[in-house]
Image 1: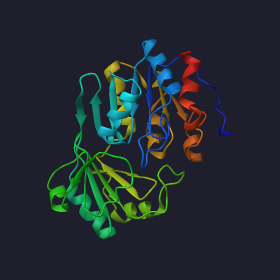
Image 2: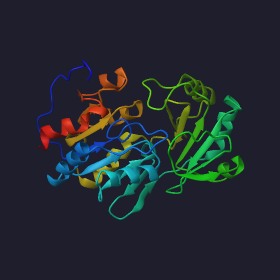
Image 3: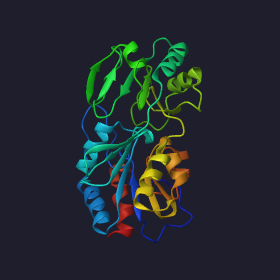
Image 4: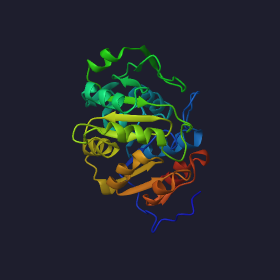
Length: 283
């Protein structure tokens, strides 16, 4: 648990709850499948039983998002994935929104920054298509190897550029090698949105798209304002969502600047922090 205390705990129940996945409701995924605890599943169920919708807002690709949403018991509502670039209607079982980018210009810029960079690309629910040297060191849906020319010839909702890294997945600090890679590529922010990850990853998506736009779209579907939305997250890509929402909850193991940006700091993901906070409003 962090020693950063909120100025004032929210007392009134929210009208919409948005949850990140990795590091928030499940342990960081790496080489094995991770699932939510019974305490978290029951807490989410209590929110829904009270008539309050629960949305998933994650940087994960769509297929991994849908899998864990099902583990959480979410059989209706919406999940925002790919850092806000894709949305899935859990009740209908279909993609309800997807924005794409020009892959060619991005890939050429990253190769100019580092010729050893490898790439993966997400197309809907297909899985990760990737270059042959892309390190498959985590649990995922792998569609297969693909040539760079094939990637550059088709728009995508998400591209991943990856370099070697000493950071483990779910570490507290973003990878310095990935930061240098992204800075060297220098993608135009009017054409791309860039997220630097922990273990050599750089995510590239559509401009003006983030977790904030993902949850804003879902909130509009329900007719709920940002002031009545509570969000939970643990990483730097949650900061836009924190800024948008009326009340933001950071996980106890999050980086200090992520915790500092929140209205409240929950116990860590390993202590079922989401369940602890939700129980105040939905016992």
